[in-house]
Length: 210
Image 1 (tube, rainbow, N blue to C red):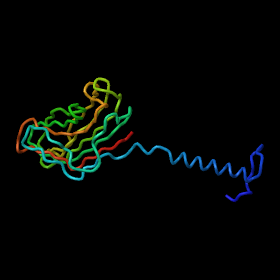
Image 2: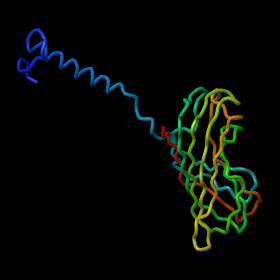
Image 3: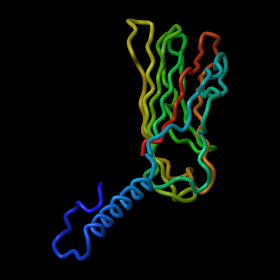
Image 4: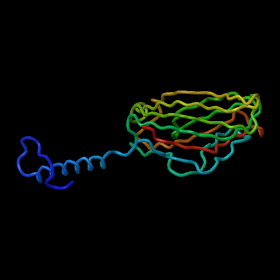
């Protein structure tokens, strides 16, 4: 903008210079406001960079989370109402016919969501995926805080390479709390120990989506 060529508004007093100075000051205030806009609430929190351990021939729950970058933890009082997250996991599974497997998501001793034990068809080195959404409904100690969790576990079986699985949705307003640190864990557990049953993850990402 070259000074002295502006057109003052009706009623403006003073020179074109004063008018154009006001315009420049207005543009500066807009730029400052844009710079101070909050950053996007949609961003990555965790990404696995290695496979998880293989959970096989045991009835003891094992972690499906491989080593990675970022964090699966939220500090005490770190949540806000409406905070929402999306978890995506993929990996490989081998199991005998009628094997039973449970996928459970916890924060400490609080169960956030679970498939329960689901009966599987025979699968040999097949793919599986897990997608879960979380939303914080209320803040506070156990009994006051509330979280809604819904998800779906799918795998492909040997027969006709068809997808099967289980979905779930749960509200935890009894044992979940936001006044203490929360560390997300994702575990798999076989109902019976068998060398023919094994599962592990190769992909694990957690994103904040709201």
